[in-house]
Length: 464
Image (cartoon, rainbow, N blue to C red; front, side, top):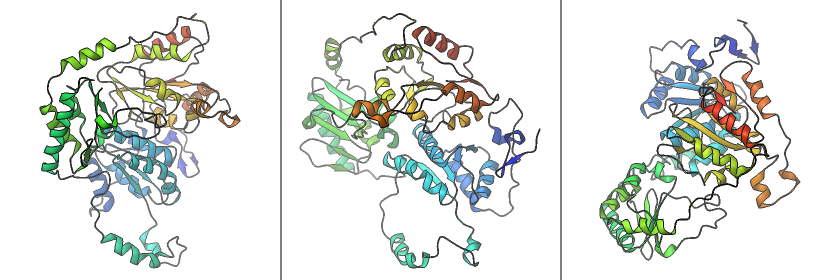
């Protein structure tokens, strides 16, 4: 094997045996533990204790020693990403699947680059631990250039803030339940739902944050919509399709992680979502007529029009075949664009989740990813990370020649992008190493053959 160095980084040939890319970082000699405990030791150990198995990272001059400690910690893997922003989004998806995640980047350029991903995780109440290295403390006493030359002027303000009362630091909130508010909220919600003829229960993403998913399943006795219970919702422009969501607000109960909103009543604060759903499930009457009424008005799902298998592939034909391939041991990942709207029509079998960047968090499940060409062009280099860690995801890349969802909103020449040879690009990233299979599909006949190959002979490969 060659001993080559490029830009200060050892060639992958030093880290791996050819043809064995999986978990390549594990073959790096682990650092010898220091006799004296260090902050690095403590941090690595605590990450494992809170449930983190993988840390997404990009190395830099101010975090290299810390990364050594992560590599040396039993039960902790270091997942190298191609950019700080991608590491942040990987940690975002990991937290959705596992409850908590961690990423580690370098000072200034790393911290600024990852900022958007961390802000997004914060807005979704996800537990992402972002670790950013800093300059060596010895530099402060030396006569070296430092970006912190104005720190003295900011110390008084920081001192005041450090002593201020903060109720919590999102999303690690240990909410003490207001028992009186909980009882009144449950009683009022049960009264509304029990009187309804066709109540409906809608699950939102904040069920995950509140650790209330199991409680929600117990509460599924409420099946169907003259009264609504929204559990952990987010009413943003994307989930409500441009704020066009229509429901009867006078009969809508909105249960959030720490409060419950019931029509014509004050807001009930300090009511944990999990506790609310558990108690509410016990107060609801068994309502089989709601489901029977729903079945009577249910419109059977329309089948796509039959077409010649050799015709150009249509979207509805593609998603029809995707529906048939979904299994309980899979996770569906939809890009927040045209694919997101199309995937809403899919029915997920029991056990099949819908999430993002979870292949590392749930290695026993196979990820089915649907992404447009515009989104893919924003982070294609992370295919190399997926290959390096041996993921066997199936990626459906829809080549629309531009930003399709933006075309629907407001068309213009700026929505047209440069076409790539996507299969060729992935093959270049593979570089003859790792398990990867790519193909181009132009018609239904080719799609059927590709799915059969991805689910059969290439089931252990990353497929695009």
